[in-house]
Length: 274
Ligand SMILES: [Zn+2]
Image (tube, rainbow, N blue to C red; front, side, top):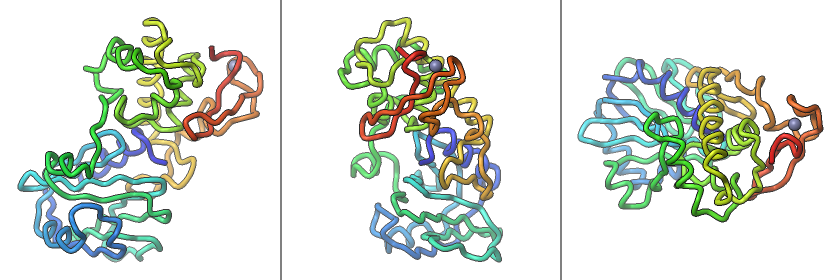
């Protein structure tokens, strides 16, 4: 599933190409991928709107349009958002095609259909509960180690579960939760509230390092993730623990353990992580 670094890569790639372009029309081939408003209304409303910004919040791509409207794309498990020439053959599982006035098309493809597309003003989308309230961005310079400590302190749930909770910190999923807990030398099944201030500081730094390194490497293509040009990322080549259960820990050589936490396969080193 695309997480913060993958979504950031797509948003950053698209930004210079989409700014100032107008969405001429939208061809919805699988209307239920649009969750808000009704698909017919969505198609009517979006036609003719100019793109004013492209950003990311958590795992959401936010395409800011005229009239304070925002086109929100969540890639779910297998969503891909690509910018192509209109002449490019349409791939299977392409659910929405946004035609731009320069002849290019922004296409949303999603074989597993867990993704979603929304349109509205941000307050209206929040009000309608179409998008959830998200916690702070872990790579935001304004988000400090003490802020993370304060968020963890009240929680009895395992550390891994708390990191996956989008209302606590936004954008972290299974890959980067495991990677940052390994870097921080913390066991994923420890109660979040039991962390010392010092350990929280280490986790804060590790989260930032894991996410920023992955952004630099254009994300992890461990599954179906592709960037806006259909290319794979590079981070999957250098992951420390994710997907490596049973293989030797790079630090101590002991085989990495795996355990289900918060419903997700979690990989960690029982010697290095305490
Ligand atoms: Zn180890």
